[in-house]
Amino acid sequence: MSRTRVPAVLARIVRTALLPGACLACGTASVASLCPGCLGAFGADPRRVELAGLSGWAGWDDTGVLRRTVAAVKDDARTVLLPLLRVHGHRLLRLARRGVGDATPVAVPSAPGARRRRGLSVAAEAFGPGVQERALWRVRAVADQRGLGRGARARNLVDGLAASPGVAGRRILVVDDVATTGASLAAAVAALRRAGGRPVGVVVLAAVPRER
Ligand SMILES: [Zn+2]
Image 1 (cartoon, helix red, strand yellow):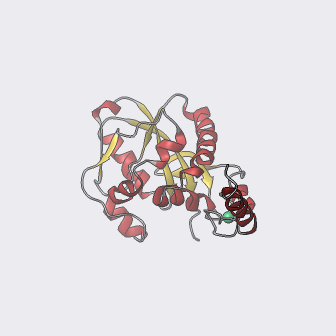
Image 2 (cartoon, rainbow, N blue to C red):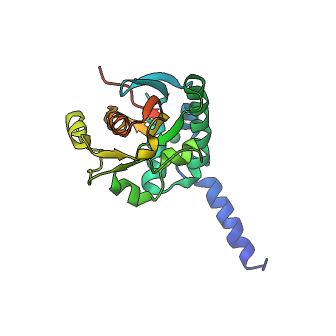
Image 3 (cartoon, rainbow, N blue to C red):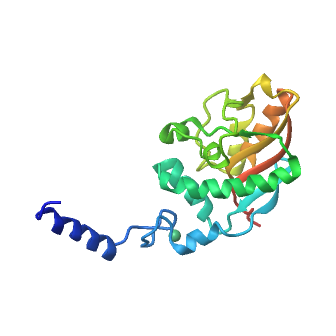
């Protein structure tokens, strides 16, 4: 290293120490990608959920940290957070497997706009290489679900998905990244059944508790 570069490197180290980056989930100053508070949300026990008429497991997202982490990967390509989502996903999948055994995991496809932005399926990345990403697909353009109310979401998804004939007769574990109303999961379950598949459970990285 040349003498002139040493001060530059030292300056960068000092700057990094004095002005740490921001937590990708909450934005507060943090040296790590997630601050200790947000990281703690991933340590909470997953919960049993009932979604789209099926039982399953979900990260319980009462703080919003889980879905903000998913969004950071999805929308801003913060792939540094993927290993954390994978640990979270594998934990959920292990719990689900106790109930549904070796059912085939099938990912719910994202809205086309969202998928173009990030170029990867967060659910497929988080739940691992065994997840089928192409067993379900959208049969027409569906607007990004965010920003739509519950009624609009359900209408937007009626008949919005089709499933591969390859699912016929198979037991399927439906996996998704975030479940707010369960409308996406319900559309996926309906499409899989139309194709002769047998959805037996659901797993989501983050389930948003219903407002009372
Ligand atoms: Zn944070």
